[in-house]
Image (cartoon, rainbow, N blue to C red; front, side, top):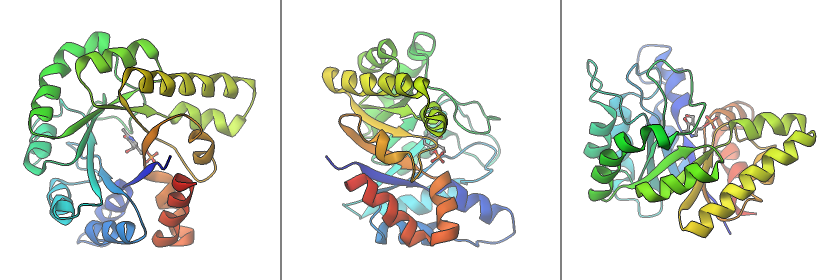
Length: 252
Ligand code: PXP
């Protein structure tokens, strides 16, 4: 089974924001990713606008609007409210209606996403958000750790998919000791369980050209979203070649 590759454009925006002006242009780089075979584009807008800014979300939605082959995935903290010219995370999603919205439990000042939802704690507050997004036709995915009990709660809440947080997998992959096999088994079991209860499976964070092929051994992996390593590889290889290299691993 092929796994869709959604390229996360945050780091292109981060470089742009380090200077005045629109260089590099996020939309143009999005086009290069699509031309190289990416199945979708991902952004993670945050209230501090450190990388993706609200206009990027609107511009990319426009780019992908008539594209039947590529999906738009907006990920982020559903409780990030309007601050200054940041319209609020949910408002951005409602305005642009991406194919998929991945809800992530991160706080406004967090460096990057580093854990999945604890739905025993936040399930109740997430339910109305999830229902609202689903009623507008947006597919909803929840960022989760490989924990079967939590995955069952995600299903009960009505999520269409989960995105497994692969940061710990990537860290353990570097060591490849006995604990790596144990940890990978947890991801494998989580993927099997997701398939069994009928919830779709995505994965992301710290995936790269070394660790992706092994992670794809988990069953029924529908999509990976990859930004940081792909952007670093693009510095050496060029963006087109980097996307093609990841795409090849997703299709093998
Ligand atoms: N998934 C989520 C929820 C994320 O926050 C990120 C980082 O923006 C990614 C996937 C992609 O991670 P990376 O940039 O390490 O590939």
